Length: 249
Length: 249
DNA sequence: TTTATTTGTGTATAATGTACGCAATTGAAA
DNA sequence: TTTCAATTGCGTACATTATACACAAATAAA
Image 1 (cartoon, each protein chain N blue to C red):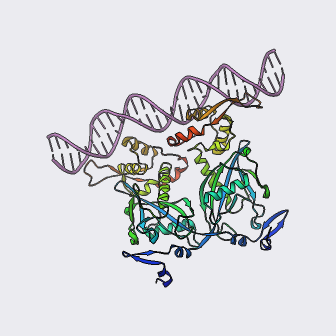
Image 2: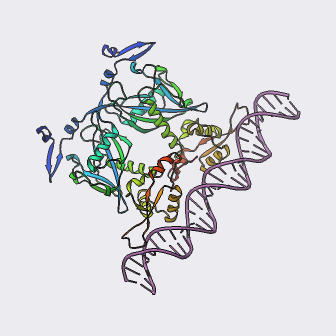
């Protein structure tokens, strides 16, 4: 049976029933609050870190949470994630990409809340954290525990996503200071992938890729022979992007 | 200023303000109708196809749309996508995976509607389409036009996702009949990747992967030397999954 | 029987990945 | 000063994989 109310929304056109009032159609749909959660990764002391706060929900008292917020009524998804990121880190011009949407019925104690997970990579030293409330700080990605909501699952998913992604595109440079040594670069790859790599082959691979710029400068204050410093040639990379497929370790 | 209404939701605990009433917190969030849209891919006559219907919105009269529906209030995201798929194709046990969420403010004429895009792969011959209403049928992925909503963008995204994905995992077998020749398999890869592959090297690659089962049967009714038929060894693949990284063409 | 077409199986070569050797440079210890 | 430990920078030998291409065998149609 089609109710008269439903009929109001319909018009008949060449034997097909067309809905003329899209607003009234949509008005019948159930609605859900939507949020973004950002897995913000950084790299320090040869460890991959993720930025967390204490949950401000009594229900998750003492547990750790990703940075997130509701999406405003007239806000684009990416913009909401970027807002969360910049409000807390003060950073702009940062790598940020959508990873996956989580909509489990019981993931939020306040009722069904959908969240769109984003992954962000940034250089810890480049940014003074803003709003230190709720014990905002960096946690080792390995050995996380005591997470609020389904945030353990979200971090795991973002971390796996990152592991794949850095083998397709040289995103890892977003995590390093502008000037870095090959050793730092290798430590980063080893930390993210969780494997040991041969130093000499690693070096060869990155030199043949040919977007490291030799700065003719050297490390300082290291208790051994200092390594050369390089920077990443973003321009050259952008031009040759298409050719890329895998970094492959 | 904190309103007295807000204070009701708060409790103070070790200098941190905790929100005790999660439901009331969430009640303040804007809410949005959420839908799923399925890019359902099939393979026929050496062409990659996608299943579309005519949009039933007057606003998009004559335009083509992915299969989609609202997500019910107590329905998991994957379940909603699976429901859309099985209602229309009658298929169960089908490959289905979340790809990306689209939430552009103006993507739906009825107001903001979030959609979670899913990608599905199935064998066209295995399934009688159900509900032929709205001119449900298979379209060539190449040369799509006249799409409703942002569905062109969604199909493009799902197609790129598929191109990457079949090089990491042998998903393509979901698109083939149970028994297939190496030529069919190669045609499929060529259709999806949009490249020509060397027949002999292609064969070598798949034999060294070692999960094709030789059925000792042959093609029939072909106007040339018939090729051997194979089936995919899902069991063996599942066991060796971890070792995988890329198929690489 | 011949021809066109396609399958099935190779091989030769180039490119890439992997394992590892060794001199050079630095800070710190002897 | 000399020696040592640690690390960088550069190389080479070998194994593995990718790529290009040749040719016989099987089938339908002429």
